Amino acid sequence: MSMAVAEAPDTSPQPKSKWSVPAPNILAVDDDPTILAFVERSLASISDVATAKTAGEGLEKLRRGSFDAILLDIQLPDQNGLAAYCEIKEFDRRIPVIFMTVEAASGTAIEAMQLGAFDYIAKPLSVEPLRDLVEKAIEQRQISSVPVAISADDGDSHDSGELFIGRSPAMLDVFKAIGKVSKQDVPILIRGESGTGKELVARALYQYSHRRDHDFLAVNCAALPDNLLESELFGHEKGAFTGAESRRIGKFEQCNGGTLFLDEIGDMAPGVQAKVLRVLQEQRFERVGGNRELTTDVRIIAATNRPLEDMVAAGDYREDLLYRLNGVTIELPPLHQRLSDVPALIRFFLAQAKQEFSKPDLEGLSPEALDLLSSYHWPGNVRQLRAVIRRSVLDCTMPVITSDILPVEITRSQRGEESAVDGAAPRPGRSPLPGAGLPQLVKKLLNEKSNNVYALATEYMERYVITEVLKATEGNQSQAAEILGITRGKLRDRITSYHISLKSNVEIEPDN
Ligand SMILES: Nc1ncnc2c1ncn2[C@@H]1O[C@H](COP(=O)(O)OP(=O)(O)OP(=O)(O)O)[C@@H](O)[C@H]1O
Image 1: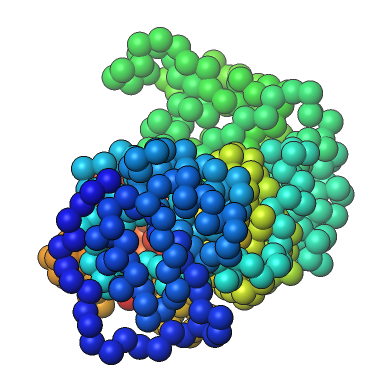
Image 2: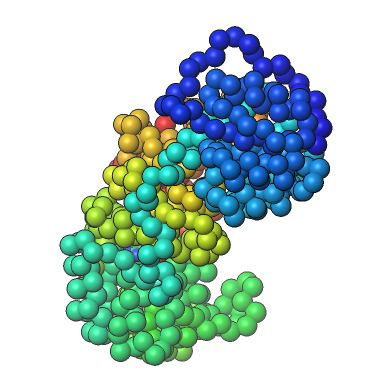
């Protein structure tokens, strides 16, 4: 498609190509000779450029030559650029293809990206962005020619959606503990940082127990305000409180004969703690607003990442409940203490994501990316690793996931640039003073022509507000949730996802 070129290529002496001889080869396909001439001049310093005016001619050149990247017009006279793209990928699926589009055709650009194009560049073209993008594509081509360190095809994802991965000595101890106690009908407390797999342990305990043919129900105690939690667990009678229009059966009653997983057991008001203790001791309880005593036969598996002993000392948690709960404890170590599990976890999550996001061309992970992931300290534990792999699979337009696709907190930590705060990782666009730099951040994002301004600015603001309120409450999350007007579960979720580090009860530092 014809399109005027806005900016003349600069004719000043160009830097020498950083690639060794032979120079990289680029194929540019466009029916507009001025575009082709522009591309040739702009890229002369970094690569050889072959040109074609039609899709047919381009495909012919591709079959006869060897190219490191292709610049492809999206509207060609003989064939739609997207169709030509599919033929190119059939011939060589590793070759990065950059579409040249007019801004108005952004729908097609999105379609091109969905098909797995490397990137697209809007016309009128400018020298620097074009050169930068082509350099990136050439680099990708070269990196992705390295054999993969981890293949996306040898995970066990097809076996089960809930496979429990781990061969480190620490995880073997966890598996042994599950085997030992699963058949004993005693309460179990699972402890470990957020994202270490506590819920998986609870499910495994259930699956290997005598109760496996009965219900397994889970309640996240931090996700509900205190009064709702009480009624969720124990049910309520009609008229027990405003809005209780009919009788409700609670989880303890519903789960009779089964297993109840109480997640975030540290987040319970004293009244609820007392009622749970009674169930543990006598298997008896009353519905909220009721006076009939009910009995239930429920096995309780509880989980927490909170220091219950400190909470007992501070008078925030019942000692007798802690004593009842922690008769049998399974401790899940944080991922940084079992980094030898990382490759197997990556393999598993890669295979899962490859299938789920329909990326049949995905081959795996480069050795450099594996090194980075295997030495990161993973403050968000396995949940964070899973999220990173899924994000990388989504973002990856080449068959191999290379280190440049990984989130900046991981690449930075390798270079020793991480912030001083535990588990906190700086991200692009952050100023040293969270919150204070919001106008600058927005300006910067606008300058960068970001198309994600709302999400990045909201995240920045949210993070600032949460950190400030946590400081004001000296780390007390229940109070902070109340002040913020959100549930403790949501607060906990944000603390985890923004890696806000609560170094002690009083010192909270944001990550920059
Ligand atoms: N060993 C493992 N093998 C496979 N997947 C795992 C493993 N450990 C954790 N995961 C996955 O990581 C994610 C987080 O695990 P899970 O929800 O069990 O953590 P958690 O400790 O209960 O977190 P929280 O305390 O925040 O509730 C889940 O998607 C889970 O399937």
